[in-house]
Image 1 (spheres, rainbow, N blue to C red):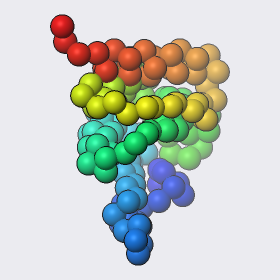
Image 2: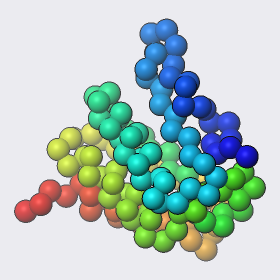
Image 3: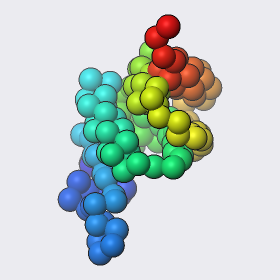
Image 4: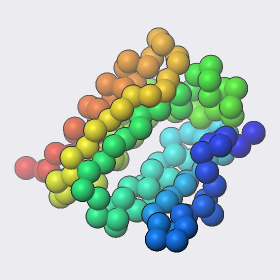
Length: 133
């Protein structure tokens, strides 16, 4: 089973006038934070290079280890503090950039942890955006 199961492949980069405007960073089933972080950094670097005017983050939390939906589709193994680090990593790219950012929580079915994971991403993002004083 491939994950993402039908969200695109690395060689799909757009066509015509949109060539280069699409980035897919597929990860293997069972990906942990150690696998996920370099992929996230690759995506954030591409976003910064694209010079965006705003950012909408589709925050799918079915990446949580043991989530019933992700387990059936290959499953990631993110957990606990990984979501704080995920938010911090994204936020760190915003320190010197004033990019309006909206998070849309649209996945996550492990109901005993999804609220905490969402709060951890947002809290980590806020922490990551702070400049050292």
